[in-house]
Length: 187
Image 1 (cartoon, rainbow, N blue to C red):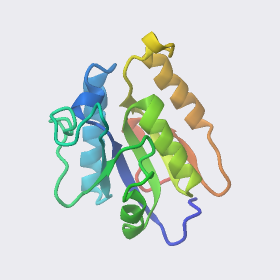
Image 2 (image 1 turned 180 degrees about the vertical axis):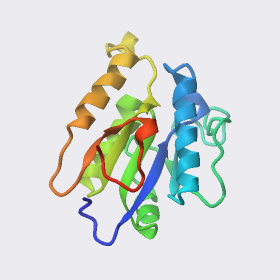
Image 3 (image 1 turned 90 degrees about the horizontal axis):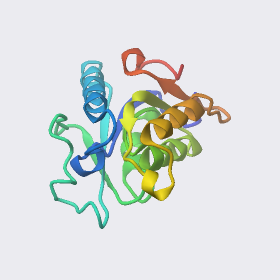
Image 4 (image 1 turned 45 degrees about the vertical axis):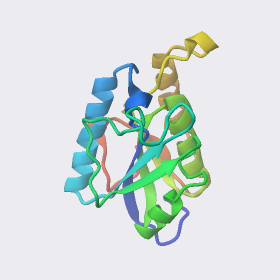
């Protein structure tokens, strides 16, 4: 279990599911639908939903590309963390938000698999959180022109290696959308 003291709660962390981030990604509609179903499940179970929204030179704050996709509707009671780096913890209010919610376990969904998702997962585990990746609720763009493997391979590889991730006193792993248990540990 988490190495963070007095942090018994779980949160759903929705990373960068923004118009300009997920546009044209593989299985975009399925991933967004899976994220949406997890948001609804978390709300029904009174599990905090924390939204992360990236901005940089190519994704300007306030632009249409910067907006959360229209299929998802963060509500005013849910925390929204703005970030400028891959790791959602880096130079943001995320740790303060999670501490206030007594969260020690994260269920992570969103984009980009090979950038912000990986950085956030590793950042969470290194900071003492349990971190579960929802294997069918993250995606990434095609970076093959720059020498990367095709997106489907990037996603599959990330699912593979996160399934076997370990750290002292913390859990990691993957789970499919239909098997997410906000009350348990990574499978």
